[in-house]
Length: 131
Image (cartoon, rainbow, N blue to C red):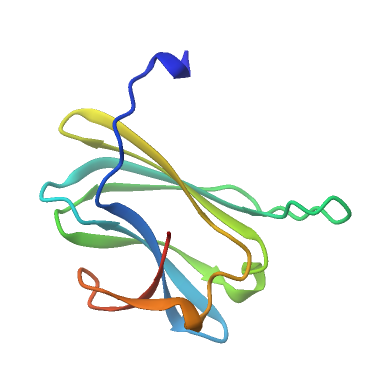
């Protein structure tokens, strides 16, 4: 069962969203802040609403990023401003030191905007960081 699989705590790996053309689309990146590379990185992304009256849901997109070097990042996908009113969820699975790691990163509605930008040292630019 899933509960029987040990899953170590995810540290120094996060999802960030960077403005490319702030009025149109932004790009989603996975940042590896570890001192070691992470391997066999899989990301599943989707958008959804939790309103009872109007249900909205995007397709689930799956990405295989292979390996991400230590202290680096890799683009996952582009994200359009039209889905910023949804919960944007990114399920990240990877191996570090032969241990399977998993974490769900969820950006709440309207959290992706220029007012939430902060500087990321690894990417050397301003991004919206998952909190």
